[in-house]
Amino acid sequence: MSHILTLVVDRTATSLTEAIIARVRDAIQGGPPVVLSPGEAADIPCATAPDPATLAAALEGAPVDAIPTKARGRRKGLLVADMDSTIVTTETLDELAAFAGLKDRIAAITRRAMNGELDFPTALRERVGMLKGLKLEALQHTWDETKLMPGARELVATMRAHNATTALVSGGFTFFTSRVAAAVGFDSHRSNVLLDDGSALTGEVGEPILGRDAKLEALHELAAARGLKLSATLAVGDGANDLPMLREAGLGVAFHAKPIVAAEARARVDHGNLRALLFAQGYRLEEIVGG
Image 1 (spheres, one colour):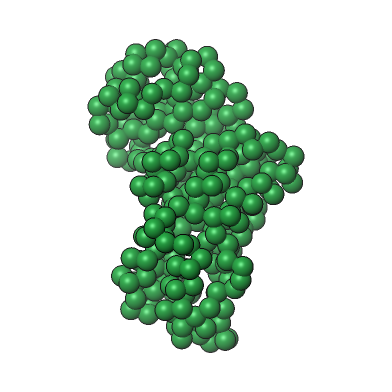
Image 2 (cartoon, rainbow, N blue to C red):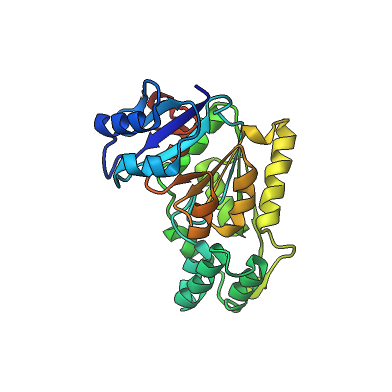
């Protein structure tokens, strides 16, 4: 069969039962399922990408992610990942704003920008401008409170162990991407630069601003550097500025994404963690580094 439907759950919250797998298999007229991780993930071969309405009916509201892929070329040679609310659990700029007493105001702008309601560079300049005078110590305090998304280390370590290139490409800031890249094990990182005067933020961000176009350019550049077709790439993100790279990657995954992104993405992870991206590539539990 030419396609695979991967079913994945958050194993800390529920279990992928044989009954669910059988119900979905019957609904999509799939082949014999292959268990990738007992109670967590399974592949179902199928002739075509299943109809979303058919899948929804078969799942009966169960918190299961159903990710369709082509059977050929499932394992990708390049990962390009967003950072905020994807590789880390928070929006680092919003958390930084908390130290200026402006979290709610700045978070409201972030939500609109990530849902595509505002121009990203304009919204970023506005939010950074509001932080003028904030002492640099706030950056370290924010980093100290930043948590990695479950499955982030396994995702990157497993793909690197299978010769993939991994890159963190964010509309956030180098102070954070450098630390996240080191903590998770990414090969490289790209992001924006917060300007300061040596003791406090100036309220400015370095130009040009890395936004949606730069994320897409990074996908193309990194794929070309490895001699990869775009079909051999994986991109993951949650905001509107991630959509162009999600559309063009061989596997573009909207991860716990904003509504505009979830509506347009070909693949979604709404319930599971980042391990789901490994299962979508056909990795079994025993192949996951740190799993």
